[in-house]
Structures are given as C-alpha cells and as structure tokens.
Image 1 (tube, rainbow, N blue to C red):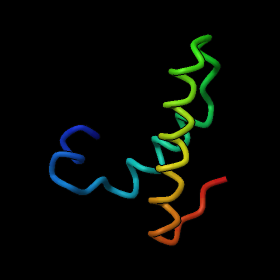
Image 2 (tube, rainbow, N blue to C red; image 1 turned 90 degrees about the horizontal axis):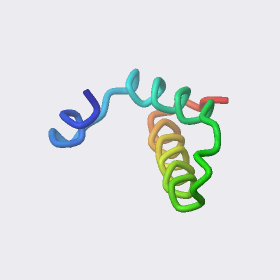
Image 3 (spheres, rainbow, N blue to C red; image 1 turned 120 degrees about the vertical axis):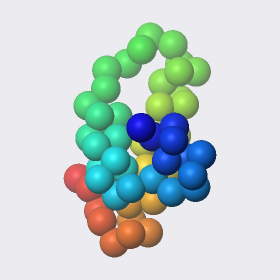
Length: 57
C-alpha cells in the first residue's frame, strides 16, 4: 500500500510505475481543485521515477 510506503519513507519503483499509469489514465473529476492535485501527484511521480532513471511515457 502506498500509504505504508510513504510512512516508511520509501515508495517502491513498481508502485510508482503503477501510480504513474493509473494517474495518467484518469478522467477529469469536474472539480478544478481535485484535478490540480491529481496533476501535481502525476508530476511528482514522474520526477521520482526520473530520479531512479525510469522515464514513463
């Protein structure tokens, strides 16, 4: 679970990849604030993967 990984201070590369895939395929929620948060999460996941040398599409 991502929550447990975050509390431990490390999220596995596989979970980051899965999160990146899930967030990139999302539809608009209809709420600009929610969509903004999801965009920030997507960007952060991509940054963390790039730090690990993995570059998702």
